[in-house]
Length: 418
Ligand SMILES: [Zn+2]
Image (cartoon, rainbow, N blue to C red; front, side, top):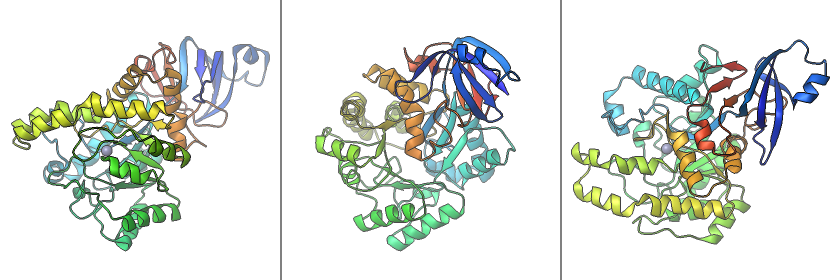
């Protein structure tokens, strides 16, 4: 048993802070949280090793609700499209990339991550290796291959299905292989040659939602158009990924207050992946150089997918109206790497009006609730897994700066990055 004494403890519950706190850790779990004064008075924990970090702040480990472990997340890599990775990499290489990225994320304080689409079950393989204690790593939730129509976004990952019964079967296959939730590609994305129509018919989409819930799984849907986000706000989906509010021509956002209210009323969580678009724009010139995109496409991409005007505006609008947002980085995809992405996402949100205390909650307990794992992780509370960060800077003052290269990361009670 050990007792970690800190200057201030943020539990992850909204607005919760405890000065001069002690967290008692027994094995993998948090045994108790109390003030230093209470700790001194009790003899319940006299056996505990007292670790004095009284110039540090404590908060729960971060939860990244949207990553792709098998992608390099490195724009200088050359393999900027999943299509090329499938073509050029061996299965072993893809698994090793997934493992490397999981370790990088953990070193940056991400103690739980949700993989929103993988090749060859790579993220399930890494998850299993961690679960079976071959290696220490973050907790991983994986969807396996994301569901898409024949030739749809990320078709190369193996999740193609057409018609309600093929969709249901594909979901059953993914669950059998170890998937924890269902991911549906609701619209186009960055896959070569995919048209900007919705991926599935209403009937197919409903079959995916019904099958996921029937099998006790949550369902996340990728939405890169206003039309799809609008549709999803009326359906029983659990999270909306990217949550774009502009139409397919990317000319302007549709700031629809009724849509936002429906998302809140239906308890849907939204994931803005606010930095992945920025990374995609930043590397578009390279795609042109490589002959993958044309100069005309580059020009239209820059003018249409204007980052501040569309992505940030959409986040500010939704967050301002009280939509429960979670943090997903899309790390792995394009230029979003596993080292800096979490910091960059929080930085942009904070600089655009998000409150640090709300960001602490969104990064931890709210993310856990959205993924349905808040019984075990997401807060510094009795009985929860001891996934913790010890930080020199106060996250309530500036969470982005505080979690940038976190000083100490604790995973299941063990310090993992010292
Ligand atoms: Zn993604």
